[in-house]
Image (cartoon, rainbow, N blue to C red; front, side):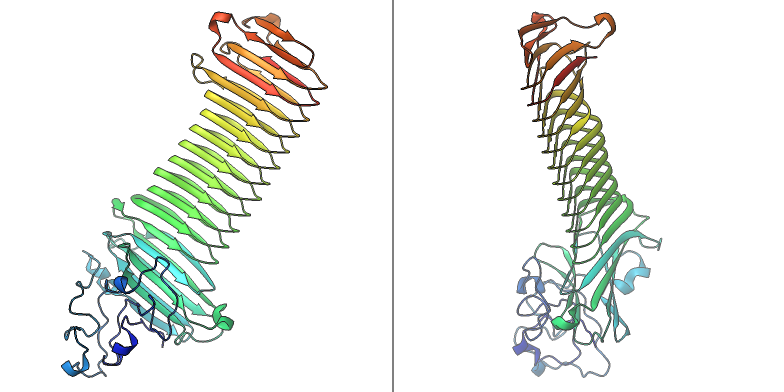
Length: 481
């Protein structure tokens, strides 16, 4: 039968009466016994981490009592699995008696091919959930429907094998690791030919009646999706959900630092508040962020689109390749949008410093800026409507492309500065688009060639803004509106 693995070295295990099994799961190489390791702790927790143990399961009635002769030196007679110099066993602090049954790691062998492990953790440490050698794993973090749960995170792991039984092929451990996290670990020791058949589904229940904070949740899975939703009554110190080849979604979650990442999986986040950082990273799949507020927002993918809707932060950075960037209602002090071979389209974007960079694709939008606007592409047009946050502040506007047209619309009532626009084999123009130039500042040309215009907009004593645009083989049109 699949069992909780012990944490003793092989040469000492022979002195322990059969049936004394603990839920620490550390052996010579960090997980399991020396003969059947079952994988390594992803943070290198070894024998030191093994010393942070949990409450032991009761001894089967069929086993005899331990006698002093059975125990190697330095091991406690009251608990044969615990060295006498080890710290006390940890027990999750639960005030509600209905959860007492889950303070220890509980295993329920539903049938030969199905195992359910359950453990409740207090709020005094972060929680780390991870797997090793599992073919696919999924995770759901949601509010606990048990209203009696007021102060514990309950983790349920359902491990199944599609072809054969789980005997001696799976271990489940609950420890405190060297990072002082509650460490919940599921490991398969199956051979490679049967590895593809073993899967694990995690259900993590967070108390819905508790209002306060939790140190954090960290997840590392493979080949599966992770979802966390509607945990808006608890602020987490950190949230880090990582998987591969699966989607990740967050809805209504608050924390200080929040990270989601995957490979070849879609990332979605909605109504997220992060005091410090929100980060979403994937490859070859799209990213959709809606209603995100964080000091820093960082998102990146490849060969797919990124959509930002109602995103606010001090620094916002979105980067992809061969995928479109679409931004609506985005505000930041520093905003940087980067892609290649695909367009950047924005609407109602506001930033002190705004950087837009692509190649071989158009850039268009309406931007309200304070200090800097830098737009770069190649072989495609730029269409920009520029508004000024603070007309009294110095502003630099730079637009650059090749082999395509530039159209720029500047605010006639507030833009006062120098313009420098240049193209080749085409025409450059600067003019007011207002009827009879009513309310339009004077335009003075220092250089007024067909393809090159340089001059000032407004009186010379009011110059505080700079505008430059360059392209090749296409026109540049600057309009005061």
